[in-house]
Picture 1 (cartoon, rainbow, N blue to C red):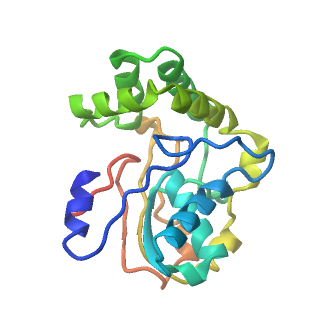
Picture 2 (cartoon, rainbow, N blue to C red; picture 1 turned 90 degrees about the horizontal axis):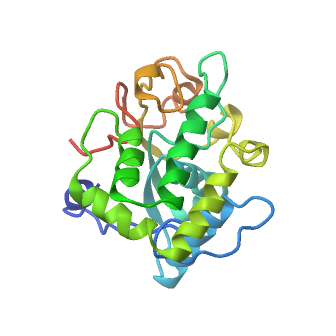
Picture 3 (cartoon, rainbow, N blue to C red; picture 1 turned 180 degrees about the horizontal axis):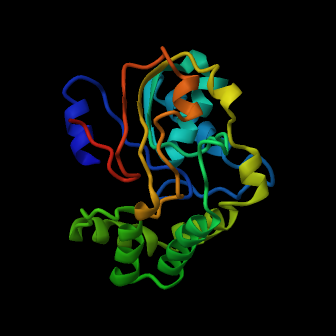
Length: 232
């Protein structure tokens, strides 16, 4: 993703936020309810501290969920959002099939790498996310350094325990809520087929997320994989 930062940095002030529970940022206790909103509070706190009134947000996967939450509940702080294969959206099952086996695989490879961190287990986790290749030694080294930090290890294990739970699913946004977003600049909708093993999502060509956002974005890209968001 550093390539994106360099390219975007030619035109914008760019910040890559180290999210709570994921890196070397704080790892506060998980609240009993609506724990996902803690990520949004983290972003708001940072903006307040840096005296940033409004910003554009690019979010991939989990951080796409955060970007949507920002756009829906803090629109006064949002210029535009860019969604790269975002998570946190409960889509119409007529168009999208979410396979529990893929969620379980994500959780299993992640917890295995956290409870028994080695370059081998870390690489296996990254290769699950990037099935088309691209896992470098640098990526493995960086992830290993982060995931062997005791505080981060504990927080991420708790985080992955919450993935796929009924509580987490209940916090996802539906099509009606998504349609209320007014400031979308770009949607990268990955075409996640069985071969990718990433959540088992089918083609996004006629998918409600895109339909809900018609007329509110510059363009979309299909045929991408979950971990392949890059500036072209």
